Length: 201
Image (tube, rainbow, N blue to C red; front, side):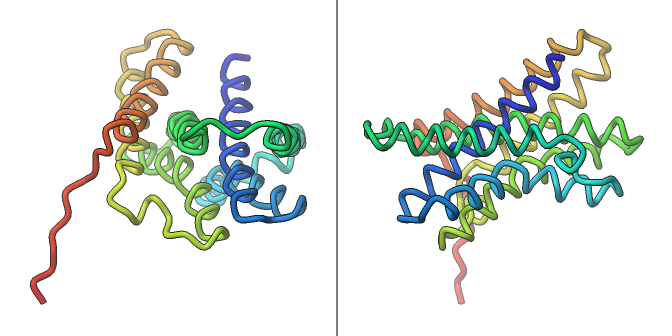
């Protein structure tokens, strides 16, 4: 039940970040819904395709209801109030952290190695946000110096390591999400970036 709840929370958070970005671009209701949906379920869909499984939302349409609810709630909110500074980044960070962990869990449950599980977690966490940025004509965060994919990898790795210790499921999931979320929020708060190598040619 806890796992299911966290999955819905992650979908809602990512959908909010997508809806906020779409409204900032001046999209209409349909555009907002599309961007919110792509952001929320894009990563999990790609993960399921790689794992050879049907997309999870095809068998449980409640995920689509959550996406629609998040988009509508966002539109109603911004109709009357200005979104808080950094709301997009916070919602995105939470969705990233949750999906990175749940993606890693899906990889392990499918019988793959810990390394592949971490990769599945990273894909689940970052693909939705990358698609959102592309649809909104921005360079995806994963392609910038942002500590973004790194946070997803950290959360997924934490889950793989803690899961091997046979701790309680809720404890492992919560602690792993916290690792990715805290790392991403710290990077946002203090504008931390990965070092880059400037070309000499």
